[in-house]
Length: 640
Image (tube, rainbow, N blue to C red; front, side, top):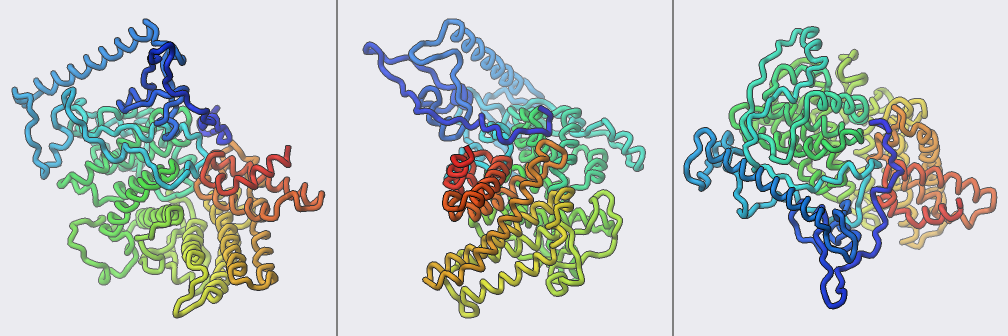
């Protein structure tokens, strides 16, 4: 299987859990049973159930026991192998302790010297913890237990995230000076420097212990391949990072904490699209977060006030969303929002005299470069998109603000590294006031779709309630009118030819259809609640069916692209699972068995396509599958 050809329908990594066998008694004696490999590795209590322990079942870990079957003790060879492993680990620990004791400037005492919390340069250079010392666990390592049975919105093989909960030991041993050149892909960068007149600086050494003891830095060659994977696959879905500027920064500032964080964040997203590099995912995640923390703590370099640090957070958020770690994503989004406002990213194009003066000593360097300004705008709008997505999934209130309050122009057309149109783009409100005279890009169209979606969700949450200004039906008809106007504004992104070449257009089209379904379903529910004549719901039901048919057409058109460069269903799976599930609900609402034979066959064929599409973008045990499981079960039975 190629790096980019991931089989998302393969759900072998999510097995059907059999009833675990508990340790039992045989002939009056307890059967000897050892902890599973996962629990032994993480040094946590294991209930030793077979074939999977309770903890691994709960966390969906790949539970296994070395050389063991129920009712048998470990063989002599297995015990010898375990003893050898323990001896090797003990030898490594003793070597690290010895290095810490005799290193430069080390004190004879084995007691740890106090660390000045106001000296960030000393962070991470503390003595190694001795065997038996208590270890404080990072909250990030704790398994997530909220949000019900949410498993995934991303159709990736969930092996991508099998090590997501591994311990992040950031206070590890001094592993020596890290060579910053591991962050620089030399292949092609020398030619880039020569072509663009960039002076190649000699990388300065980083302080010791900048990486955690269990996060191994990647080689320049592997980083280079992961950069290529990211920019060739994931980048078009949210094109906010300039590869040209990123490559130049790697050459010009190889010792920047912010750039190190961004470098590993780019590589991190690359690992999600490559089965070959999946083993590097945990290290990339740990190092991307670790270097951002160091960037925050460094009071002298000023790395925090850079677009690199902000973009690193955006990419980390995207990864956490893909891995369905929504609680982590929400916390990371909070950091990104605070940083964006401190850097005045929400006022990029505002009147300088009206820009708020915050006494936070953070500011991006002023620039008149159209390409750099465009990159800053796209980065800010990407944060708006991601926060809105997590908000709708969790029910949390958005904190960044509404588009009409931002002094940020909409994104321009063209590739971010080859912008040809330097005309100023309109603001959000400009398009609202003159929708017939202004056109928007698919990226900007995503912003208009999301702004409308947030208002529709707020309306549906308050169904049955009126306000002093508007009742339910007044709000409903106003939103129906807005949906029609936005659909007209974004009409060109509903064309199949646009969807074939633009993954963002695919998201805009399918989510606008889902939004229309959601709005009209809200009206149908209110008709039933108020016990109004059924005829009042007829038009809304017809609108739902038409929108669901459009989702079916798009899904049918895109499914054959599985595994190809244009497999945008896979690429946008985080954002298109909801529209597909909404279409399944609508077309399966009356039940296929209630249709005439010809209509029944046609309906089942459509539902089969939609179910296959949902399987393509999400594992069968996923969140959106659970919302349509009854329809899927009936369709599967009828199709057989």
